[in-house]
Image 1 (cartoon, rainbow, N blue to C red):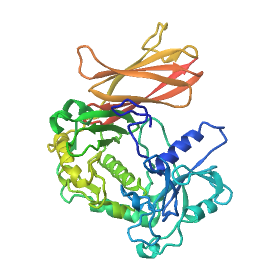
Image 2: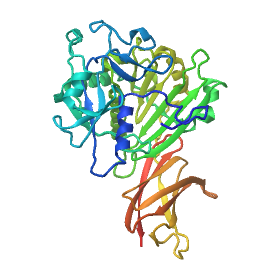
Image 3: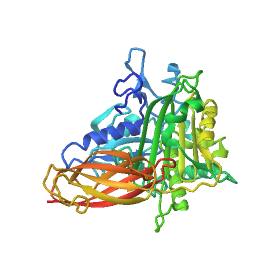
Image 4: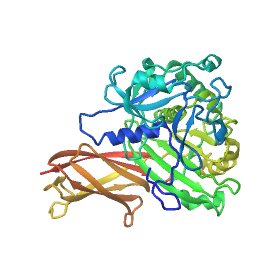
Length: 464
């Protein structure tokens, strides 16, 4: 949330938030409090039509908050407040907020909501819902929906990490209400291509090198980041100047799932299933009705599944799933306006030839400990506050690396990727600082330069 756009101003890159962003920031802030002060991530689906209230970002020209009962009114300020029974009035299909304790008590716990109100923890759940949800509109009968109650408040996982890595429970659909689950499954089925070609996605880690060739000399990378974690690598790019007629930035989010078989090779079936889980999470990541928001996509030649925002949605979004890869593109005024840009990008990154998804292999690793006569042969580090490195040699080029330390005994300071003299592949050097005595496990992650397939390596460090 502190990323800067081309102006260099902190926090200027992402100017829009929804209830999930607000809840995530609030949950993260609360985590810095006393250890016993656990909050709960609350998901309500359906939530319903809202009473007139203040919503984050709904302001007049001077920046003053304005009342609203029609949250998705677009750019027409006259539609912020409408008649309670007006056809076309929008609701919160799903809403996320924070409960004061974990596990959450519907009768005793107060609510914190940074999106609507705001609710600052001075109301119990029943009172919060009574003041927030419009139960008098006849639109529930028209749309076949119902207003939320304390009985359909569910606890979710909330923030699971702050390293930019995407994480989801394997049973994410099982946690959803029956109607919503069926809606998502129908969208997944409708997005499937009947006879998909053998295709793969490559070179998403190197967008700055080829973007001008594909989208023209005016296109610039306003922000970019490539990361890797447990079984998942991600490339995130924000592009400006991609369309002369539309100043909206184009955001491209690429996720590559790598689940391995027992012999260390890529398991295509498990990886493809994980990519479909990611698509389900994208469908479920909005507070609008998925049936109203999504339709089958028009870029079926680039993947096994294709979805996009419906024609009446005043924003463009196109998602394709190609094997173990999910490409999520957002920008422009509509999906129709976004399609030519998306098609040019995917034409460049799609390989229709059978492509071996090579998974990087860690050939060897060694420890380099200052002042130690047994460098490379020992994993024992002397003292708290000591610095040491782990050098890993891989058989292929690497786009990104990361480390996950189990517990608080070590701190990752930095990593670097270097060429290996006279050899193919790359060496990745991780620098750590010791913080506590004992034996500590560290998982090291590496993403392939071309395909972003990933591999992990666990090492053990003893601090004495």
